[in-house]
Length: 74
Image (tube, rainbow, N blue to C red; front, side, top):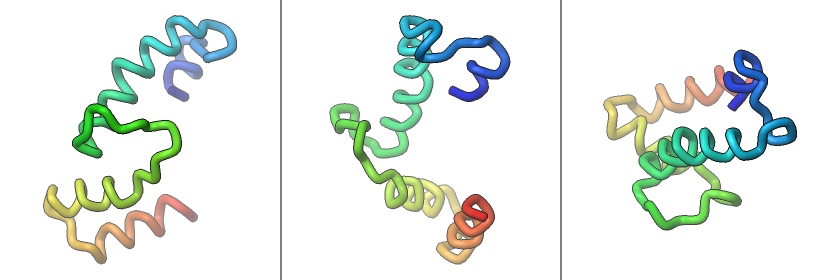
């Protein structure tokens, strides 16, 4: 959603209707794909195990996932 804020000026505060439509169609759809559950509540979900599983199923080794996490959390 930062891209929409930075490039188009769409924020939840300034344009909540457009913001929510973009979030539901893009972000929520992608997250539901990652967790493989169209009905799960996304609001307070810990995505780390789902994303780890997705990356390993995509061909990464656990060590590579750990290295990626380390790089992203510096």
